[in-house]
Length: 143
Ligand SMILES: [Cu+2]
Image (tube, rainbow, N blue to C red; front, side, top):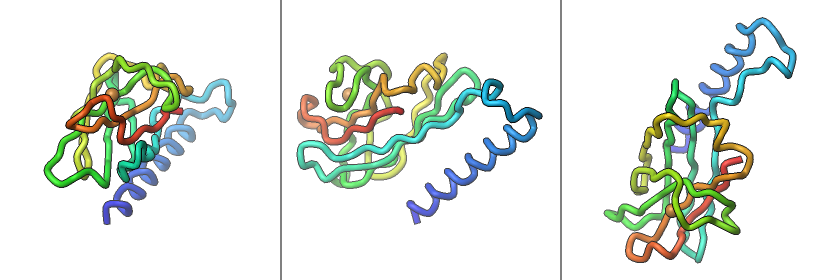
């Protein structure tokens, strides 16, 4: 059911975007609004078996990040952040902390940030082992 609801949310976002483009009255690429939704796939690292998705949505001056993970041990909350860099070469200093990741959805509102500034492969979302922060258990690039 979780996967279905994620698909439904993505579909709803696509419909909203399509509607916004239609209402803008122009199809010219140069006049297209900046992307307001970004989807990130987090894959397991270091054999953690943990993976997930993140959805970043621009809401006014804030970006709302919804992180949905699976494979995290029951009752464990793992630190998660947006870091500069790529998953292959991550700057260890977080740029934006996220709400700790659990099995299920966690949501963070990052104030005063434009989604566009996070796009283009300059940042990645990572999740850390709760007992040893140096161990990354999952990572996904923000494209
Ligand atoms: Cu981190």
